[in-house]
Amino acid sequence: MRNTFGTLFTLTTFGESHGEAIGGVVDGMPAGIDIDMEFIQSELSRRRPGQSHITTQRNEQDQVELLSGVFEGKSTGCPIGFIVRNTNQRSADYDNLRDLYRPSHADYTYAAKYGIRDYRGGGRSSARITISRCVGGALAKLALRQLGVSINAYTSQVGDVALDRDYTKYDFAETERNPVRCPDPIAAQRMEQLISEVKAEGDTIGGVVTCVVKNCPKGIGEPEFGKLHAMLGAAMLSINAAKGFEYGEGFSCATSRGSRQNDAFVAEGGNIHTSTNHSGGIQGGISNGEDIYFRTAFKPTATILQEQKTVDSTGNSAILQAHGRHDPCVVPRAVPIVEAMTAMVILDYIMLNKHTFL
Image (cartoon, rainbow, N blue to C red; front, side):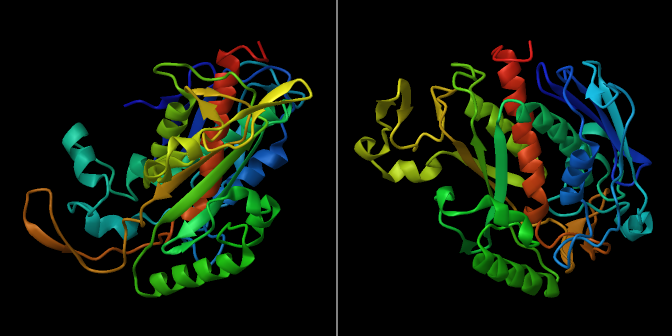
């Protein structure tokens, strides 16, 4: 099982949904970075359960403890170990699933691969494991602050309620002012209402997260197998429930023409940039200094509070009735995870390209 992400800046994670704790080790953190514990905790709080009536009501404070790699408030350059205790597991909610394979979960595939599975909340396949990604991402963000790189993600679609694809129309400061994490207050109300309606039916719904990276240095990324957009795509698709990724104009460019899609170069004040940004800030797999923007699609939460047909571990037909506490829509809580994975990719590639910190 691969549990490490990154090349120079790496995150190794451990833990299960209903185990003692979630944790990890960040290696390659540049030395001398101010470690803002309040900021790191705030990033975890954005991801934690029980935030509102449209998220799972599992009551976890997700308090992080750094175990190493920090001295007098600064990173030392040594590995940063951390841990977040699980305190509100209700494993009994999953007793009826001990021998059943939940539709569209990892139950069957884990059993096929390992011959054993932790049925309590999905074990290692649970989205609770993304706690470690948020810690790693928060540390990466602290390093990126020194370079003026900012990363902002937001909910751009829930079901059929969608924002305009032009991210420049929105004020990112509005994103955290509603439980859906949508920068358009009117659309946010419609999204929240839709999620509430779906939840009342015992069902779930999917959506899309848009992410924008500003002030990324030009020239990071590799021209062949390490293309920057490919690594961002791999990072996003490693998030639980992620089903699709597109950057720049994405799939919509398939119906366009080159005369519209090409980004013309202009020179102003000795700086070269593009007059448009259909490319999404990446050309030939390498950043060009413009805003990097992309979209990640998330499927509806696989656990629904309705009866479903399935089979047990011996192949006998069965009816599954799920219990427990689950998100009717994963998208609002996926926003900080998208930012975290983006931050780790960008920092790793900056270090690989020796722009700074080395």
